[in-house]
Length: 239
View (tube, rainbow, N blue to C red):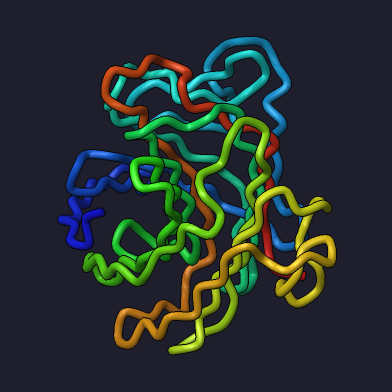
């Protein structure tokens, strides 16, 4: 797994991000109370709809799901427009609807201020790990990875909380915990402990600001449109 990345910043009206290999993810602004935002995508196959702005590539509704609808290795990004969280302690929940194959990536970002500042969580199928990093003032800093959860398969529910500031940022990740949002304090979800906990000291790469959340993905080489599907998205402030 690469530990060094070149971050290429592209400035769209909705702040879309790309990494050195050309993969994108989209930002989603969230509201104040869980679930601050939500979209079950239960509507006819069409473009995402009025609440979504596609900034790059092709994203659509497919069989009542959010679909990365471009060809393999095509950059895709969209923005959901709503209010932002009121604190930097954030949670996000989404259902993965396809079994990822080597070369697929799912991105989730937290504490997003703009295209140069955010916390990033990545499920990387090629190595069956989840890892995290920060992007601060445009500088990418890899933190650490874990293989404890493996990668999500079809219908796995992903839940993540990001809590704390300074050198005490804690990221907790669950697969298939029950409940629509984390428990009070964000250390458990449906009374369950997380499958992965990251508590690396980010040092000068720490991020103590940013009130947006994001999602994204990239289809493996040789893949087809709709090979990555997500559903039942929600997020907000940790209760």
